[in-house]
Image (cartoon, rainbow, N blue to C red; front, top):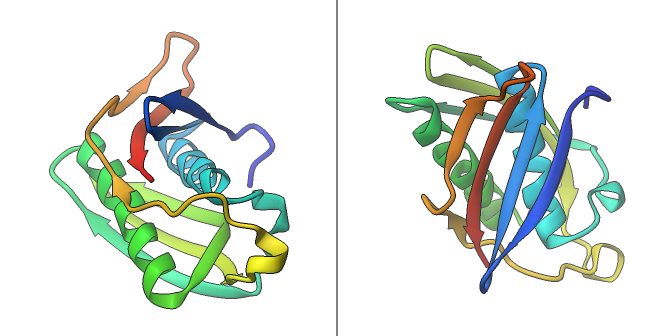
Length: 141
């Protein structure tokens, strides 16, 4: 991940907000994905040995963020994996990504929550006044 890419979680009633920011829209989406991993476990404990390709297309950037995060939730659930590295390319509301991760190891990863999906709550994708991109929403846990 680019050192300029930032991520964080934020409290939201019974669920968890995820937020990414970066110099580009792609970096902000990667940051939001890292924040979603952080809602589950410490991303630094997740290895990057296996790769998965993800493609999404949506009518706008906000829907693309929801689709992106839900595609990751699907891949985590069906492959029993966690992801720690995200290489995202966005072109005209089409997202292509390579994600790196590894199978869940409960003893090492110590998952604190299971993300069920991204929601429209607090959904925002925008360029901030400082020129950085922000991508955020609440995920159901």
